[in-house]
Length: 414
Image (cartoon, rainbow, N blue to C red; front, side, top):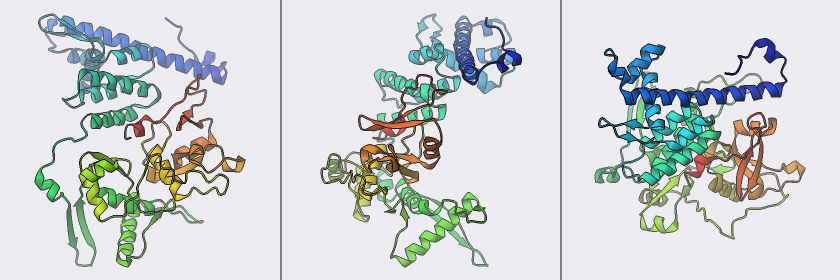
């Protein structure tokens, strides 16, 4: 067993040595969790908890031994079963559900939080998923967990489930004929209006697209914007109502009018069969998208079209509309690893800065949210384009080998 670290010893280490020591301690902690799961799995297979006469299940034994909460104890037992296998009442041993995850925990590269996210994602796959589908999903999620936090793995699992069952529950005919949209409005004596609404996906996407340009904080030179989020949204709602009344202009965002980006093949749009993405997130049937196209301006995104203006060289730093649309089609949202921000919240960033001679061209641009734009400009993270896609190199203190990372979440929405 390694000697315990003391404050005196640690204070004598260099900054790099402190970070290396922390990384080593965390790897050992994760490996010891695998050892714990092996022991718990053995307790479960032998029925040790039941044989003690007091406890009826292993989670209750763990709870009493280590003063754990019931959910935490139950989660440990579930992890032991998933990573180490189990034994049937007849004595037959069943192999682990997540062997790839078990190896990753043994190597110390993923945490218990990642294990839980992957376990829930794989067990939550649709019943139609084959054993091969589940094995592939486990591998994809485990690879993502090595470079991403558990919440990102959870979202990626949801995207995989959607891919395996894009239709979901078959909608009822009456729901297609009359989508469920409700708006309850009540006017008070002093003229104020109170209400609540419940919108279907199609209408909700339209509403959030219209609201988005008006919801950002608007500080003045003298003080910050002190409005709460709900107050900003209330003011934004007033703005779009005013614009609707004028019916002459629409709000703009990054130089674009309010636009719903629809990605669907021409054949699916014509036939009404299949699915597509609206605003880079909402999964709608081709029939619904075709209905949107009946009463809205359609922005076609054609892959490989030679008529697209995707490079204007050094003419201007401002990204023209055609290039931004192609950028949205390629990155689908913030390209920084594990970021789920949609394209509407993102800016175009020159990989090679325009001031340093970088062109305003698709192969020199990435879509990135404001927060991660700051990270790229003011930290050791680096971005580059490889094989037509953005990838990021983490600082050496995050990964000594600086292995490139990509945003796999948006890739699942392709």
